[in-house]
Structures are given as structure tokens and as C-alpha cells.
Image (cartoon, each protein chain N blue to C red):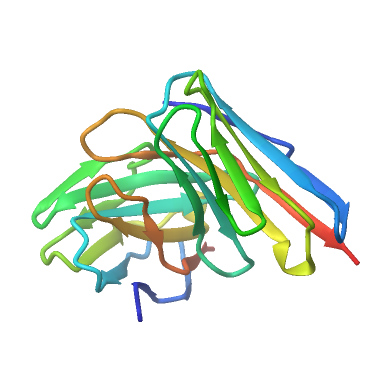
Length: 112
Length: 111
């Protein structure tokens, strides 16, 4: 199946610092999504990207759809304690049933 | 404001037992999905449905069956549970060409 490489696997940062994480794929994706998962809950959609080169913001979060359509990154600015969680990238490639492929996640810890 | 609701939230089974996980969505979404999440891994697709009465296999379908008799419900069945099926199971739904919305998961342990 499709493979998504997400890095880093984990991050420990100080409150107020900026964070960057990225995903790369072995094949082209038509849509990139970024989700956040809090402990004991399901993933929640943060940002959706639909066009190569697209740069989209959601508050302190910014994500970009890579020009090659094989990568995406997520930046979080001025991190706060509630940013703690696991961040997943996910992508759609062409297909009739919109099957998502997920990265393995980035565990973010924000230190006070 | 329910969204995607999964029941039960927790379950412990013995090897060989059977059970059904229920997923219900109130957003009139066409597509529904069942994933499993294991430590250190992303979500892996088990089965999915593109509409009432239709289902299809995902990445890891073996040992599971599904049914979509009503548009709002998607059932995941384990006929003979195995320890390898210990996992957290997530249901999701979506409209056509829209991102998926997830439930809060069912934590299943097979002893």
C-alpha cells in the first residue's frame, strides 16, 4: 500500500517555541490533511489542503501542500500547553472511495 | 451535536469470542470507515462503505466483517477474536470528497 513517512516521531519543546513537522510520500497525493489526536479521543481535523503549493492557516497552525504533491508540512507557532497531543498527516490519492493513508504520527510535548 | 458515536467504548473479550462494534453518524454522510490504531502506528483501514448496502475491504480486512444496512450505521464484527486484534478501533464518516470525521474510539482487549 501507500507509505507516508512522518517526522519527527516525537518532539519536546518549551512553551512559546515554534514547531515544524512534515510528511513525505512515495507517490502523489491529491489531498493532504492534518489531524490532532488527544489522549482517549479520536483524531480531529486541523487543516485540509487541496492544491499543490497551497498554504493554509488555522490560527497558530500553518500547513502547506508541497509542489511535487509528495509532501506536506505543519507549523505551529508560539506553542501552548494545550498543543500537546499526537499530530497525524494523512493523504488521499486518486480513487473512488477516498481511502486515507496515515502517517505514523508526531507526539508533541510542550514543557512549561 | 453527536457527530460520530461509537459503542461500546471499552470491551474485554476472551480468545474465540465474537462481538460487534457499532458506529452511528448523524451527519447524513455517504462514506463510512473502520480503522484500527496500534501503538506507534497510524490508523490502518479495515473496511469501508461508500453507501448503504455496500462494503469493501481496506488495508487489513482479515478477521473482520462489516455491514451497512442503514446509511447512518456501520457495524464491525469479529467472529472469532484473536489476541492480535487487541487494538483501538475508530470509526469515521465523510461526505463525498470531504475530510473524514472520527468517533472517539473503542478500546478492545483480547485475552
